[in-house]
Image (cartoon, rainbow, N blue to C red; front, side):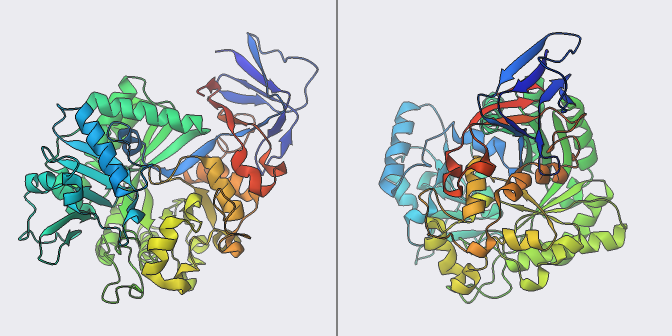
Length: 536
């Protein structure tokens, strides 16, 4: 691979480095950033010159929380994400079924839960599209599925089926299942009997997904939900050279099988890391602490405003969470905790504090992902406990989900204290950015624009939603680069351009620092390099 020198544009080494006069990479790493002499530097072998054409070169982005396998699989089923009505979904599913008559199960994602007033969907609506085989569609939130009657029957779900401990079966007034299944244990009733995608299909899905991340300037991703079958998919993808970028895998800790699961973690980690050195690691354990606000499963300190008899559905009991987190930490894993509600965030922070107390001090960098609602009493605990807050900036806007589902669930007071990115940064805590793709887009630049403006792509609302939580563009760029690198224990190697760092780079069409905030979303990725090799 030839050395590469970049010229003809602005080169930014990151907030800690500033602008650079030039950049030379060789052998997959940055070798020179200083002014040097005129012309192309000597490297001892062929040197390629990349003319940035007035653009902007910077450290490549990372994605601190995404689900590439799930995102890739969406492309194998009916395309329903863009559908704007139940009828459009029906038409898309019917057309896909007609074009794939031999497929025994129709699996797809992800529908817009705001298309009904309460986010609940009826099996009979899908029956109108396909009634000769099971249909299972995931909602955009990936915590909810919509099934037709054939899928419910295959899973044995009827009026006599009780709600599982960690899930809920939406029901009609007569007690029969509506067709919407909420949270893991309920979703698994259908997932356990559904005909799975083939291994080859999953590998191809992962190939496409990692390629899509590279297209958005991302060279490292935290896969934040890896189950045993996903391990096999990653191993097969590594053998087929199907991973376009680096990935760290977070094993999902399952409260129902933790007793046996904990003994498998280290061996599985070692197996994965041997499969693709430098491209694949498995150093994280993921805990779902709670669910989501939109289906009332996020764990709240006070009851839901529109349903006063519930405070949500915690996935783990507090003591069980603390003990499991401590065991994962003892095995040397980093902790990555999904926490949405303010009680869920408190449980996550309490577990991290417990781990520090029982296992002693070390450089842990635990991650609390999402942190949608944080009690004022817990805000300073992120910095005090060394917690990285991994926000999904595209969620920090007053979109249809926020207007139709979120704020009606929690009321205007709590609704006005969400995604406090600015407050967490000002508290001194570390912040990283992730997409949670396919829940939302992996478009990092769109997320940065939202973090800076707190507006949607149409510039609404004027002045931004919760404008006190806006952050400046350098802080947003840093959260998507150096912040993710810190989360990954890779500072010095990624997230900044210094000699010896991995040559993971992204070339943008314009300098975000010099772009009016309302036009940040217009910037495009023109190129992505992984270890000096162009992957987009």
